[in-house]
Length: 198
Figure (tube, rainbow, N blue to C red):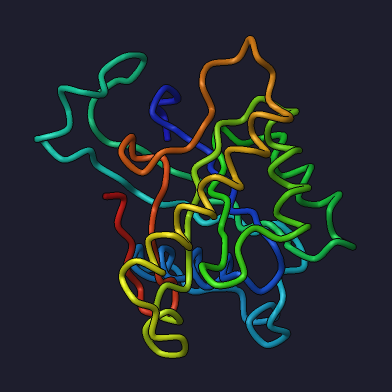
């Protein structure tokens, strides 16, 4: 914590019930942190919750990320934000202290209204988004998509996110579009505890 250049604050945002808290809780659990019992019992995030996570850049990736950092060890403060429309002020306040945002999107439902509002807010505050296409376990357990249907669904979700970004982003800010090949789109199942960026 004394190495301020290697501290990052990342918000987890998205539509209600798209798996934000499950994803954040899984990451926290891996780091040895238990979720707040009151929110777990209510099945809703009421206020932003911060999980401090330790991360070390793998040796194979250290050569790519050297600008503005001191060493390869990071403290990542993961901020699990409310997804309910009535709690938008709490989410907006949490975004004010973050460096980046994980925009969690249900792979079946796609990007919904509240996620659009929150994504727009991240762009207004010049925060770089990363799209997390979540609940991929639903594709196999409930819907049995073909490979082509799955590809088209993911492609449509990424295009929807990029449409919002192109509409609301500050053109003088660096490219904020999300692309799987650039590592700015993750595919995940918070429930099963896995994610992949390529």
